[in-house]
Amino acid sequence: MYVAAFIPDKGESARDPAARFPGGSLGEALHPVPVTLPDGSPGAEFIIDQAKFPHRFAADVPEGVARLTAVAQRPVTGAALGEPAPEPGWRTLPSWAVVATEAPDIPAAAQRSMAERAGDGGPGGTRGAAAPPRAGGTARRTARADRKAVASALPANATYELGLVPD
Image (cartoon, rainbow, N blue to C red):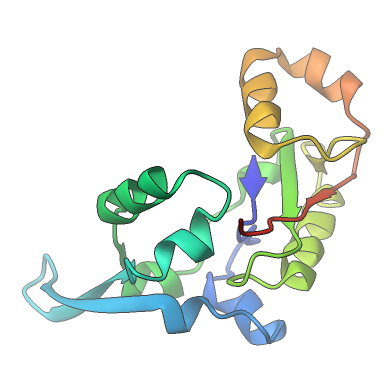
């Protein structure tokens, strides 16, 4: 399940959709932390600035949960952001996409384009729900359901949108 996420195709990196769809602001929220890579060379890991995290990634949860999540986040390496993706799972496995229309970091147009492409990408396809339920409920139902039941309950090649509005 992809929720307000990058859905790369084989050979694409997380940076590629950002280049095709201007307007995202993820880069300005990233805070670099210098690290030594396994081969001994210098590198960087990135975390979301803790002060910016609640608004950007947890606008619809209680403030205490948002602050805890900001502190507990795991970094991503600079190399990982630019690394080409392998063959995507959505080509062979049923997948679902939620487009967050108000998320500031990945433009809705980029999310929608990747979800639509994944929906047309193979037997797995990316599906959405007929109505915009909360993403957490959709994830729980998806995790509990068997593959055939989910595939028959949701329309093929559909994406649904969920507007996230801060309190």
